[in-house]
Amino acid sequence: MKRVALLGATGSIGRQAIEIVAAHPGLELCAVASGSSPLDDVDAPLKQVGGDLTELLERAQPDVVLNAVVGFAGIHATLWALEHGVDLALANKESLVAAGELALAAMARGGGRILPVDSEHSALFQCLEGSEREQVHSLVLTGSGGPFRGRTRDELGDVTPEQALAHPTWSMGPKITIDSATLANKGLELIEAHYLFGIPYRDIEIVLQPTSVVHSLVRFRDGTTLAHLGYPDMRVPISYALTYPERAATPAAALDFTTLTLQFEPPDTQTFPMLALAREAGERGGTAPCVFNAANEVAVAAFLAGRLPFLAIAEVVADALAQSDGSPARDVHDLLEQDGAARRFAEQGLSVA
Ligand code: NAD
Ligand code: MG
Image (cartoon, rainbow, N blue to C red):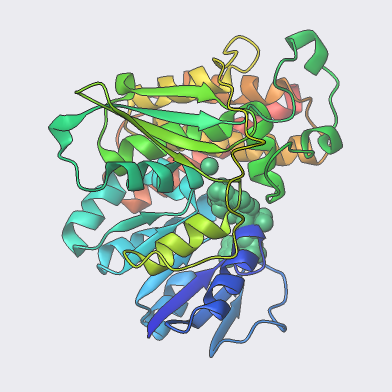
């Protein structure tokens, strides 16, 4: 029996994870946590609403931590799992993006591993299996382009949170849905892919595939490209991460090739500057990705609250990156300080915007 600690149990990923665990006789929940929503309808021996997630993990001693918390709030749970050598099924990309080298160092000390839950990274992980690093030419990260694909900047000036929350292919929590509309999500995923697979940024390409059927691809040195296909359904990567390497059955629908059309197009980086900002933050390294993430979290919350126009999200992030020196964090306290400073700077920017 594999004992799963599910953090973020009331969210979009959390709910689907509960379904996967319930359907698999070899998986059980040993602990569940949420930020503020009640957990009354979830059956688990340990439950926690709010509070310190690492205390819960200490008590639960899980075999695998599924971190499905949204945002930087997931940082301590990610570092706890890596430091203790406990398998980390990672949906909470923000923690890996922000912690970067600190997370990799914790993983090296703990001896554990990260099993990606993000669909693109699960796809890349699967396409990379069994290959040596020198055989890999580059990664191709796919994205849907979000609800505003094809629009010009002029057409984005007055979009509302309701419009931005209407994602064409995925049904997700509000923060990542806005990130998908600005393409910040693909930017976070670029940095996530760099840390997960150790591939330099210049060898990670981003391509739009509007129906979200091709979840990502790996190019190899012999000219082969392996792709991972499936209808958009997060239960598949959740199940893969929780049952790896077993690849348990899921209720996901099989692809129907008689109705399938696959189109690809380049992202419009002029209209969606978050992609270029993320690449810049990633290449700068140090705490630049942490600053990118922190400013984005502040700006997205302000946009959702009706306090910031859509196009200003990227401006808040660009300003925060410009004022930060991005010096590497020596430890987690350092990182928390940098995250806090970036948040305060971004908040000040909001009152001017
Ligand atoms: P969501 O908003 O639906 O759920 C977030 C969950 O986190 C909730 O259960 C909430 O209570 C919990 N939470 C928030 N703050 C917390 C805290 N301080 N302590 C404990 N729990 C806290 O979000 P989501 O869409 O499920 O996304 C979760 C994570 O997974 C994000 O990092 C997102 O980027 C990633 N992800 C989501 C999807 C998706 O399809 N939803 C796909 C890929 C990656
Ligand atoms: Mg994704």
